[in-house]
Image (cartoon, rainbow, N blue to C red):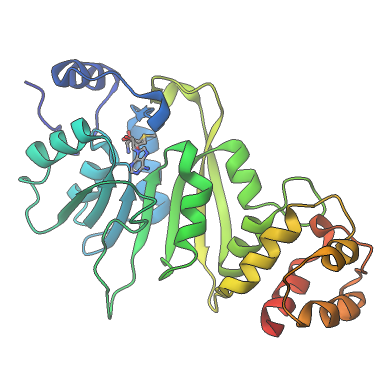
Length: 285
Ligand code: SAM
């Protein structure tokens, strides 16, 4: 029988023992690389400044390593876990230890990106998660459409983090970079070696720390749709892409005309259009 360590942190030995007690092998399609390094758990909580009374959303609590540490710090945690074996383990072991502060949903984070967090009238919330890599970008996209958390500390594949925080001019810059920059500033994060996980992933990971801007901009759904469409042809000139679109907002042509305000023209490629020009488009839509 493997019980929760006091702060909920499982080292490699405890993780293997718990998985074996559950008769569970890590499922690659669900991105099951469990954190086994207490320093990284501590660092995640520290970056997010998780304190007593905080409300935190977590995607993929897994065996409960981060979750247990956040609950022990006095936070209230809303989590969503897709794997039924892990969800049952958490329901049996962790939920009873924290009645009233741990709320677990068994399901897909793409159906409930904020883990069924009830509408909070007066309180902000944070997100802390070691994300399943396969859903990290679409999930963040979904989060940016809802009530915006005050901050996010996310364990991500390095490439995904680079895409999210890319600036105009490079091949990583895309629709998600525009939407994220509109609402969040990136605070220096932290590289995380593969040895901090079991099993160790074949990709590099990093902790990304995002803080909501003082005046965050939530792009309109129509703006996001247009930007996504334009980035499907990222290497073409923006004027010629727009010319060929069947359905488009009327303001796109006038936006093209004012692009020179930001040192761009109809011949610029979407990947080189400055952020401020995308925000102007959002104002016009
Ligand atoms: N938080 C744990 C940790 O740090 O050790 C586990 C993190 S592991 C990288 C990702 C977790 O997300 C796994 O528990 C996996 O089952 C869960 N997961 C994968 N896809 C999911 C989805 N679509 N919705 C909710 N949870 C998912």
